[in-house]
Length: 145
Image (cartoon, rainbow, N blue to C red; front, side, top):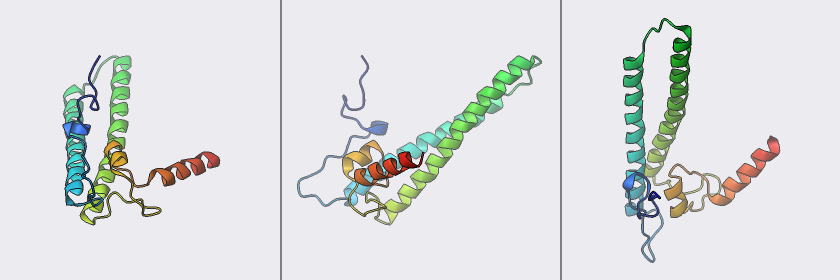
């Protein structure tokens, strides 16, 4: 059985989860630095993936004489480009979170202003809603569907 990040005490990108100290103020400089480190590591990883994709597409681009081979390659490239597009959007969201950190607004719900919570941010560093507002948002979304 393989070890997970939780089993080894590691969080995302081999960064240890933040350990709160008793009486510590929420989103202090140390916590902000911790989440900045996570976001920057995530951003670096995504940028490396973009570079690999560009290299892969340049290296593997071939004009196959067989239409089936060409179609397969185009399908693979299309899937890869869709994935990169999702990652591009995620990169923008990470940039937005880094800006929120700079403005000392990171970690607070955009809707009601309460603390999102360290554990939730560890699990989802791009979270902008507290769990209650996110739950209400999802309920509204289901009702519209």
